[in-house]
Image 1 (cartoon, rainbow, N blue to C red):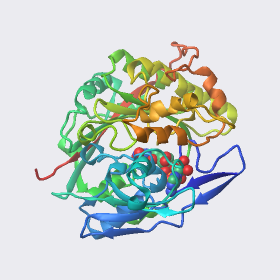
Image 2 (cartoon, rainbow, N blue to C red; image 1 turned 120 degrees about the horizontal axis):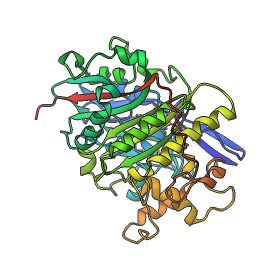
Image 3 (cartoon, rainbow, N blue to C red; image 1 turned 135 degrees about the vertical axis):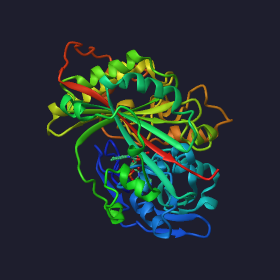
Length: 445
Ligand SMILES: Cc1cc2nc3c(=O)[nH]c(=O)nc-3n(C[C@H](O)[C@H](O)[C@H](O)COP(=O)(O)OP(=O)(O)OC[C@H]3O[C@@H](n4cnc5c(N)ncnc54)[C@H](O)[C@@H]3O)c2cc1C
């Protein structure tokens, strides 16, 4: 009998509620309380609470307080913080997991442990080592931050290829990680119709593009709600719209050449993609200051940005799913020369079973190290007594669902050996658009 643990149910591969073997779900949905200690800038947050609940609860104390977790309010903190958890405050304050100072965990023997009783090694492992791996997190104790001055400036600028989107994204790659840590500029690449594109008359960033708001209002803005929406919407646990999707992730250490960006445009134009999207999130700032081994999340200095690849579709059925998943795998394969290599790294919270899963029987260390290396940078040669904590991670990656057959196609670096797409397939009246989503923060220095 397998045990699945669910907090927000947002696992990209459904691992909190899917198993090929008989299983029970331990659902933490009723453990949602958030207790804010305004004197010590801390909060105890139960694992079944969502990002939105945490943001809402902190805002009840003051609208100038914030916490560096994810953009989506409905994500559960049990899984989110277990894998790292990042949002628009990444460059300023690091990950959600970087700001955990204590936890309550139920271990395999049913004991309820806190930081002191679990010890520093286990406390290290649960902050980024991946959900459902070391025990069941009941609650996290986090530190939150006070913004001064209280205002955040946000803006979204849209550019088409005709408006030099390629050159703009190319330039962005050279500066986004080096800007002041108060500035977070992420790029979303997607296609749009020529009609939409013609309506995009703006050619540069203007004062009118900028809106000042409190940090809590910016969480609504980035979640796609209008500014006047009641903060109570942050307590809603259901996504406003749900689509089928498959995601992958990459880390970029050198700027990609323009030819790679052009290949991305071409891929987005392909007929079989329902709607594809690439989200580039800049690193640098605080992320470069925190040591690689501070917690199991290892993606720190040396990364320019992270890519999230996404394929969305609405049609049901295996054939449709295969078509869209095949598209995203081709794009992933195409990008292999331009992203991190040996290992090709990935973000555990953007779970991707293409990277590897356990056998239904025994799984060898060598097999498990495929995803140990990609998610956590654990290498066979790096197995040494100087990094004893890492051994724990490799050996405890738990049994996953049944996508192993998909591994037949990929080589050691996760590139898929499939036919390259037909380069002639292009719908001319689609044009590609790049959106720059910028959150600028002003602090008293
Ligand atoms: C719409 C959407 C938006 C997202 N946005 C972001 C973002 O902005 N930034 C970001 O970093 N990530 C983001 N993610 C990814 C998200 O961080 C992960 O999917 C995360 O694991 C979800 O946690 P959960 O509790 O909601 O999911 P669940 O499906 O409940 O759990 C995920 C994993 O953690 C395990 N787990 C859950 N609860 C516990 C617990 N209490 N103790 C131990 N293990 C547990 C589960 O068994 C499962 O393996 C997003 C995901 C979605 C679907």
